[in-house]
Image 1 (tube, rainbow, N blue to C red):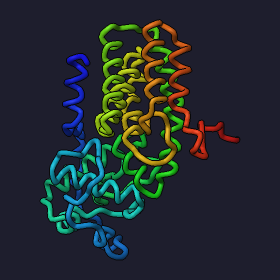
Image 2 (image 1 turned 120 degrees about the vertical axis):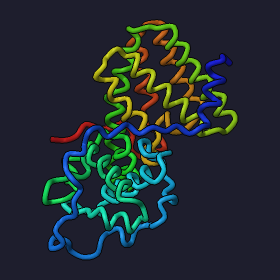
Image 3 (image 1 turned 180 degrees about the horizontal axis):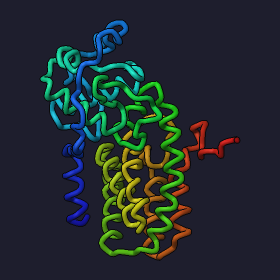
Image 4 (image 1 turned 45 degrees about the vertical axis):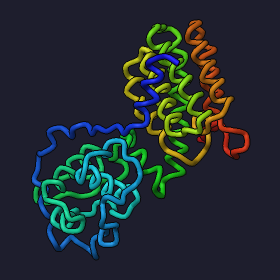
Length: 295
């Protein structure tokens, strides 16, 4: 195994982190909404008070302490519908409920605003925005939807997007041969094979995610490259239709190797076909390849 592969296997077991800065979103004070507009008790009065018990991975908020955990908690509540659209969010109430400072609340609301989940307006305060305003391509929102009431729709939509994005990326990547990328793709497949033999699902999943990210990045299409977060999020959302990427098997490794070999040979059609086979749902699952919608 190459040095890169060995390094990848070691690094894959450690946690990654990193939350992109929300930018300059401090346009309005997060003022309390008029009390006359509040109807009924706050939804978080029934929520889990201990933020540390939020166990699911949040790609943008993991490893960020109370701030990141509050982003995840509130985000999940909004996406699940526990905090309905146009509902006022009062920073003081949030701070008291989750026992965090006003600064933590303000920073968390800014992140949620950047994701399109909430909006802040002068003399109105902060309110939950309707689904039509959400950034549905945000990796955190993808995950929150995948674990909420919209889980079936989210997984179907992710499957359809991957079916559209990745075969094209594989075809394009065959025309942008780079020895270093070819080596890294091969290393990822080698890691996946070793991890499968060891029963190490975590290392397998992370090497698989790296494989698909590299493939999109080498496709030579900058707009397509910006969509790699969708694929990464899809690979980390469990359940739903099972593809060759979701279940470690010899067939899955074979399809990954076929993609690598086709790229090395400059065979765009072969790479695309291998990717389509990889993304095809296993026959024991009722729903297979995304079907065309009827109009």
